[in-house]
Amino acid sequence: MKRKEILEKKKAIDAIIKAASSPYNDQLASFPHFRRYQRNGLSVYLESGYGNKLSSPVKQYIQNLLKANMEGPYGSEWPTEEKAKRREMVAAEARYIFIHEDQNASASQATPSLEKDSACTYGINGRKSIVGFVHYRFTVEEEIPVLYVYELQLQPYVQRKGLGKFLMQLIELIAYKNQMGAVVLTVQKANLLAMNFYMGNLRYMISTISPSRVDQLIGLEKSYEILCKVLNYDAKALLQDKGKEIQGEGQKAGLCCG
Image (tube, rainbow, N blue to C red):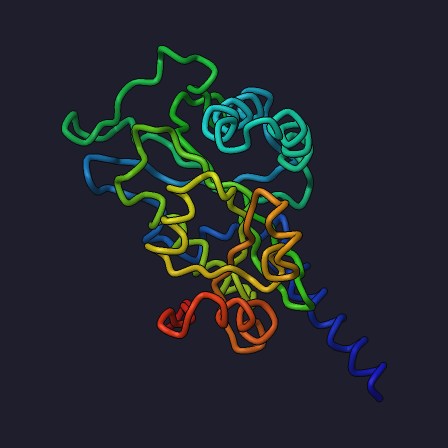
């Protein structure tokens, strides 16, 4: 019976991942109010994308933006990481949210021109509007279906305007709608702004699958932490509770619907 239960559980999880990852499932369709962001002088709109359907200009754009933002935090590890990330970005299971300038916005809302950097001006279908992207996937961690955020990259001039928080709120809604147990992501320890953004502003916690929680000695050797925000109690028990002991009793678990 135990083996049967395990197989049934695995089958159910596989079905959840398959349904969430369907190429016919536009994740933005369920959240029309998140199609646009018009605050703090920004006017942008969002569009879905798929890793195996990216045009050459878009591939070049995301690679350039990733390098500009992450080469510093990765340091000497960057050349190796860059090769791995280039493969990850075009995988069939990669899902994207692309952020575009709203070129119809009024002059007071319009964002600065990117014409000086032609490598970062191309958008989907050749439109010169893309200013950032989120790369995410539906996968499994510790027998829990999760939405794993691989990248959240924005042009510097659209940062610190609430857009990153807006995108992560959308990601959490997508995860919850698709029956994911948690949102998981990896952050370089040297990227202090990102660590503060996720752990301070958004209340993510160091997961039990992060190297520093698995083994403190291994954690000291690794340059990253794995963070999570749990969406149900099964995920809380497997992905968060051990980390909670170390981080202190004053920091409560952040539930998407709580």
